Length: 327
Image (cartoon, rainbow, N blue to C red; front, side):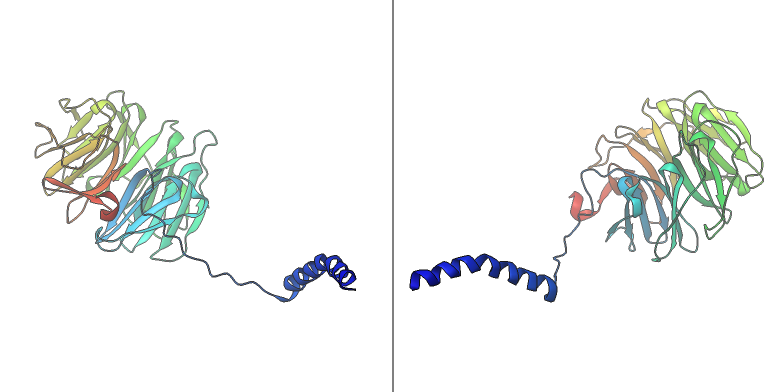
């Protein structure tokens, strides 16, 4: 009798298990209590290209949609990743806090404050559609990129119009000049200037190497580029003269902070001077490595350094950012 009962139990056991699973699937709703995973502020794959500053607020953008932001001049940071995780090449911020980020394939994102991001695609070349630089100048957003891409947006970054010149060269940056002038640094030593808010442009050729960026302090301007080329103007950009070479490294950006001129670029290149037409001194503050640095931003506290490393240059030292990640 006992053997017969055990035999029936053995036969019924699989069906009992199946029945209990079916009941659970129909009547029991599982709940999940996710454990938050802390994402590091910096990752090994990170590469950063540009940034923007408004008061004590700092934004830095890079590859794979990475965006770092600080509300307190770099003391604390938040990391987020923009939708689609494309490479973010440049960011600009208006006086009202409107943020515009541009990247590959003509992608553009914008938001005001902490609102959700809104994105759109600008009409760029199918062959080379990377937007490389965006700036807020004269009440408008401006962005430039490969194949002569040039667009002007309104202060809300809602409406964009193509303003291209027809050049099939890469426009590397767009910056403000004297008395409302616009300047574009481009391939093949080309320097473009507009005095009528981008309606018409004149072009100068300064050497043959790509020009990457420029800055004006009053009527004195300096443009820098590949192979260490630098050109100086003391009349608001009407004329330019080559600066005596002080490096062969590519120079990617230039800034002025409290009367001191700084330029940075490839393989740890960092130079400074009080007189841009004079002698430039190599500067190697503690912590500076031999990687690339693509951007310099003048702030009240010092000059923000952006590239493989992030930090703040002050007098004779470099404070690396974020602190807890780069000690």
